[in-house]
Image (tube, rainbow, N blue to C red; front, side, top):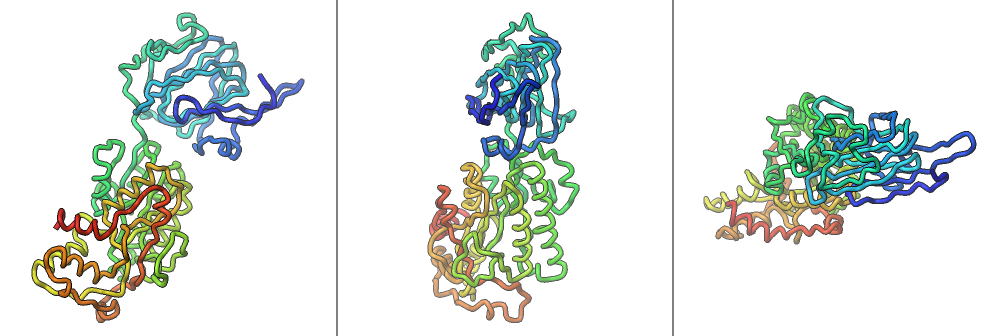
Length: 467
């Protein structure tokens, strides 16, 4: 064993499997090493996998062989005494299924094994002990995937032939690679799957069996019991498309309570789950977190909400912002499958009704399909975590401009739409204050490689297909 090596990491042919050289310091008394040190390991490239349990395996005889087991958690393995020959086989769904990596480990080596990669160890010395950290507690319903030690396809070069080694009968009975059912990836949970964005996310992820959709009847984010029923270790990502969006009703006593319950208390509970289990949390925010005093809003602008709805969305954003792995996706003027402003204007035009529409609130439409595509892009591209504005692109418009464009596109006259100020439109009505400028800057999302479509083009397509 070599002393005083520098901590370093080597990538292996199996994605996510990392082999570490550990600094071991020795003298005439023996040796010492830092087996796992979070800050230094993270700097070297180890994922922040959040270990919750430390286990030790002691083996009397050289030739003791265990595995090949793929477990539903991540694992960091190192040797305390002796030496082991390790073999790892990728048993995850995907193009690297069946990939093999082998290495000898002594106290100066360690290896990180992600969920779904099978591991096996053969001791090369008597009285060998190895230590492993795992990021989940053992449970009776844990889902393993196994491979036979003698599988001819992976052809592992065991230093001690298996017929001479110590094996369990159970390990001898595991299936060959051709009969192994690959371990599926951790799941993505979409909450609020019945809303406009939720339905668009269903379309965006159509055919992806790793994505699970939950409407309120399946998972009520306002009910603590919903959180207790889930094994969160089976998930990698939560997309929260559930929200209280009744802007005007939020100003009433009943609406205020409902808005805070759904937009803040429930979001704080989701944030706690995501932080505890290391999940990615995608949370959809709103232009209403701003007062609209600026002509456009960047992701760095401090919230200054005018009404209760905006206040609850800003408070929810604050809760999500402390989750290490989060995306706050801020959007505006969402148009999707269901009742919305565009459908209303098209209906009025068809019935020959000439509406008065607010002309001093300016922003951009966001079509739900493009918002869903933006969320999917952030996750697939592994964009840096943080806040992103996602709307459609193009020249900002007022609601009256949008209404006039709808009228023209459906064959009515733009002149049928009359502009009116927000103050005049809501005079005598109970209504929430609204930001007059809702234009969200798009430079940050574009820098990740996502180009939002032009809102006017999407409006034409939407009217052709949906109205």
